[in-house]
Image (cartoon, rainbow, N blue to C red):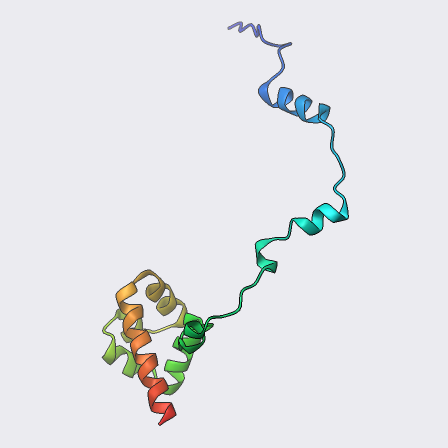
Length: 122
C-alpha cells in the first residue's frame, strides 16, 4: 500500500504555539512589583474568640483518634460507634479513611472526644 502524506510541510499546532511564545517579549519583574503582589498565605487573620473557644480549633482528626485510642482503646470505640474499622482488625489508616468519608461516624467520634475532654477536666 502506498500512502501519500500531503501535509509534510505544514506546521503543527504545537509548533505554531511555540513560535508565538518565542516571539513574545518577557519583561523582568521589579522588587517593588513583587512586594505589591503578596500571596494570600502571608495575610493571616487573628483567630476569633469563637474559634479559640472551639475544642476542635487546630486539632486534626488523626490527633483526636490517637487520643481516644490512648484513653479508651479500640474496644470501647467499637462499642460506642458500631463500625467495622473499629471492631475488626482496627488500624489508624482504615479508621481515618472511613471517618473522613462518613460524616455521621465522624460526628459520633467527635462527641466521644468532647466527653473525654469533660472527663479529663473534672
